[in-house]
Length: 307
Length: 139
Ligand SMILES: [Zn+2]
Image (cartoon, rainbow over all chains, first blue to last red; front, side, top):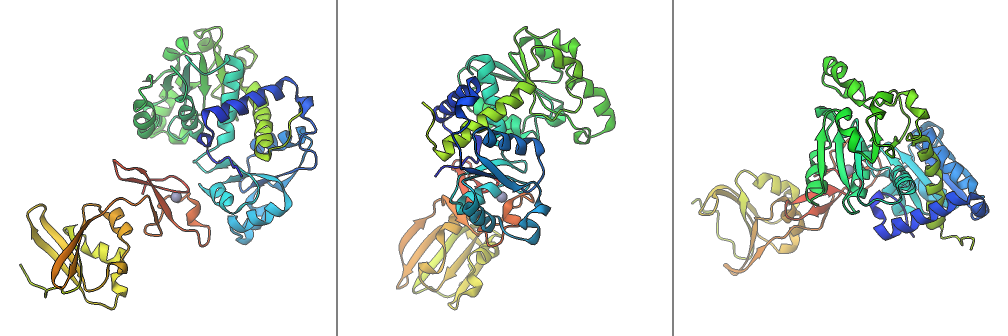
């Protein structure tokens, strides 16, 4: 049985197949509306993440299946001290597939070791969040037609942002992808990614401090939030915060076909005025997130697809 | 050099980095053994200047050589039979090590899940890097 614990669990070919199915679903969701009739998805959320949970639940409901689960540790048996391995053995009796969110890193792997149903990692601490990466990849593929020969700018907190690290690790598997890493010095991409992933593979990348300087050459701008508490001092934060806020003035410098992505929720790093720009694609991205989760559920459950 | 009695049958853990013999004593659980164990600190070494040595009066099955390879793969083992060295063993890096060290990452599932083995996997042989099976934190 297959699980999805890390974005790199899928080979390029498997990923291609999954994204092709997601794309078919996006083109005609109604065709898939009965595929999971009688199947149940358990959402085991040991910490709240409403958006991710609802995205999974919407995906299963769109497929004609049903959902059950809990949305925080205190409404679950975890508050009574039950182990992850015991919980999953019980849930395996109730549901056909599960999505697990857990503050402890590696919890979904532990679950998969004891599970008789497929386990999807819906985020484990600062470790992995593979369905976010699948969402990002589907969005890029749908809106840019593929991954080769793209210049992608990653902007904001590149040090702690696990979605950024996973996206880099996924995109280096394609040809001639250029990375522009836009962040304050304190929040640069960790050195192991620079050396082991980008450097070792000979991928082209540059690090810059101001979004404004980098934006004209980008095909994709992936925005993340810069949190005040990540800065060493308030003065630095005040000096730099404007560099990482996307507004209409900065959008004027960008290509006409650049797309703006964001894993959401946003706070103030994308000014609301940008939302009406046709290049702002972060809400489309949320829609693609549902389609790609539908495709993932279908693949992991190995259900018959409508012909 | 100080002579600690000649070993007739047993084995010698040689080329231990000076000062590390007690760590190895503890990792291998030598304190629990009934047989005679000799620890020599700061012995002269041509190769290393100073080194530590442990002599054990018993069979190789008393210790887990994988653990030893994980701690320091420069260590060598000499097997002694009837007072002479019959075999010299070098150590290799084990692919996984279980319950030798604990994951230090406070956000790791091993910190809370009961009876979960601490497993580290060799992810970079050249640089001797082991990572936690669960959270991928470096050892
Ligand atoms: Zn760990």
